[in-house]
Length: 163
Length: 304
Image 1 (cartoon, rainbow over the protein chains, first blue to last red):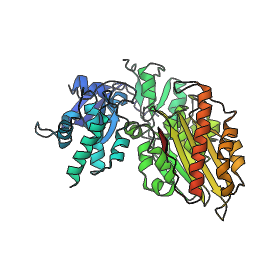
Image 2 (spheres, rainbow over the protein chains, first blue to last red):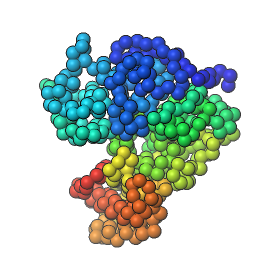
Image 3 (cartoon, rainbow over the protein chains, first blue to last red):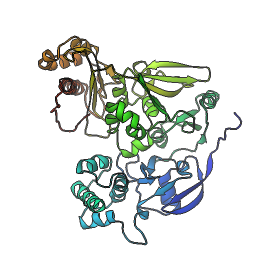
Image 4 (cartoon, rainbow over the protein chains, first blue to last red):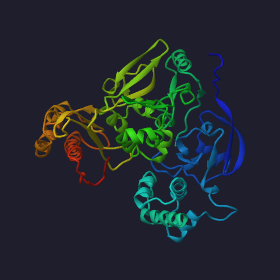
């Protein structure tokens, strides 16, 4: 049993938006705080803090998770993607452009989470139905209630990709 | 906003090590897998463990085993893994279909089946669904293991029969007999369901009579329960005679149902909701038993 290592802090190596990082983090540190406060990536938002709203959505090895309720040590050895890593060379990803073109942004607070959740869906299914998009995004809340245009934007982008 | 108080993280790789650690920590440790429920409690400082014992590196706890008789789901299998496992989709379509609607994609990616059952939130989809499969859980401690049915596991909201030195290692679902049909229905406007109903009708060889049934209602009371009154009422009934009696059967089965006041509503409302949802789920299952498409469509209702 002595082989078990009980620790209050850990060295973690992770890749965030393509960039490798080596960080020393407390066991109780949340991924959201590490991203926002240590790496300066403010795209993911703290909002409900109970995994209901989706404003803190980031991708860990491609899968959407709530960074507010996810220990930073769990990201060790993994790829983390935030909204800051969506576009290439300072440009916007097609999905981001689709949000702009479709007016799918109102106050913008939910937008990074919506983009990350939708990015994961499109990676898995490049041509999802409207129903599939609605089902996938039902855990992302937009308090401006701009859902129709958000779904339209994802659908528009999906169609371009699937041609 | 609160942050968790500092804790240590332990990462055993065998169930024996984990059980031994848990015993030695004598109530100062919390078992940790997906963290979807636990981390929220820690952030609110509702519990203050000295350490978390991470179960995710334990060999075998992340396995899904589907056989002719049963589906055994390791405690650290995430909802998302279960929902997408080819064996589950092919052989246990109601399970795959219902789990696809648990919470949201982020919770399903991180949250585990074992964590869900051990946490015993009364608004749990798996707790309701799995009872229709006569599910049982395996609890492992340093000094031995035991098996409990889901009905025996859940006592009250957030309270189970699991002792503080026990680890919920796996849940096992029994395969329905040949010719069974099922339905799962959930109603709710919020993240967690307000009412959940799972129905299984076991048909006889001619597929014209219900031989036996499982009818489970959850989320409206302190824990998911089988409605034995309704199960007895449909057993032995020819399908043709059942359709006009669903109203009466649902009403009789929910008349004395123990319901609970919470953010989702008052006890009377919950009982009425249970009645309506049981009737609708039975209507879906009986339609399927007759080989028909169920045409039940209702607001805020997911039918699998």
